Length: 167
Image (cartoon, rainbow, N blue to C red; front, side, top):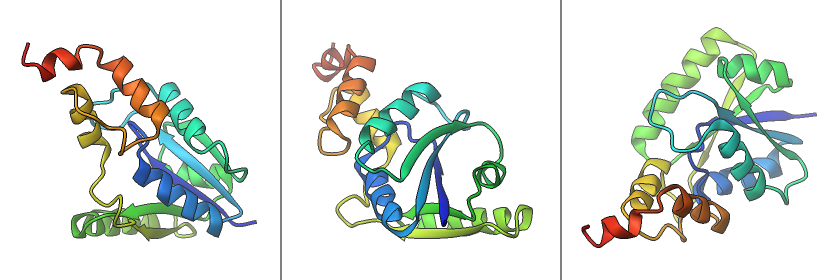
């Protein structure tokens, strides 16, 4: 059975993440969406909230599970029996970062490979940081994330409408 993990902070999960996950789920027998508990960046949703948002977004994919983790990604992959780490590539800058990360992972865990999916052009500009900023300032994120995630963002930033009006 070919098992892969798709790691990230997913804060929040976006339509771009979902596109990569759906495509990876067609390639691998089992895909684990691995949500890193403590990334070195400002987080809006707890790991439990991010896991639940991702589970709802991917509930229709029977071979996909969503779990939080707090260790090295390659250690989590090994724990799950995965020999592949899935990553998405949007830009040339992503390629540089992902290449370095893949080589580091390869050094730590030589049996685990990285497979990159090129972003669908429709989603290539979407990233979670921008989604959070738009939501924080009262902008519409409905085309960037699933409806339940947009709702969670509106609930997280209830004063965003006031910010939009300059209050």
